[in-house]
Length: 244
Image (cartoon, rainbow, N blue to C red; front, side, top):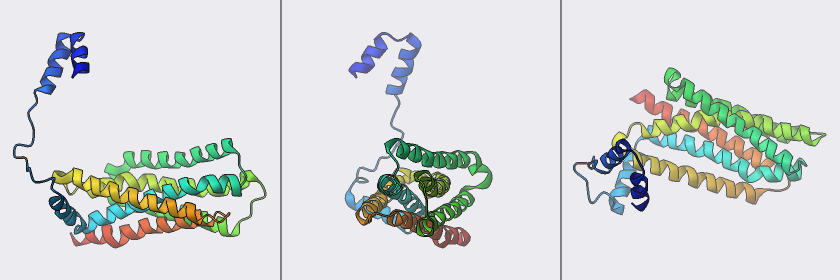
């Protein structure tokens, strides 16, 4: 309030009028439920979300996709520096290159979501993620790099493809999960975020704990979660869409 008073004292009459108008806005919820914040009511509300097949599928798509990001975050510093042999600057450049894939995916998602629809973009993103994850694991199992640059490319290239898929999956899955619940968007978003972050944290811890001096724990985990995204979409989201 002190800061607001200071700003208003030097503001123009128009700006002061707008600020006072915002402060005078009435509560939009005309009939607030004072018991809505009780734990039992919250849990009962979450049960409704969990009974919604498409919501669960979208949440799992988000959780698996985000877990792939955390798997790379947890394992890439070991793999790219200790296994591949890059220095700190090289590792930073590789990490930035992977992020470019995510940016590409999200930009494409933003431009095409209305034209192609949420489900189609999630499906395309899931397939791209599986392709990137599978290639990442196959190269880790069979390919031999003779230079640090070559080894880095075998990690960064497939991971960039995987991240393009993640960039398509995440925003559209979030929209698909929250969209059916306009009157409970906050609770639906909270449950999604909790599930997503919990799963990603568990995967990140597992990848770091399983590190054995090779890239296999990280690459195998990313391949598995990529497949998880596709299965969650096919078995939950797509089937729920067909039955409605």
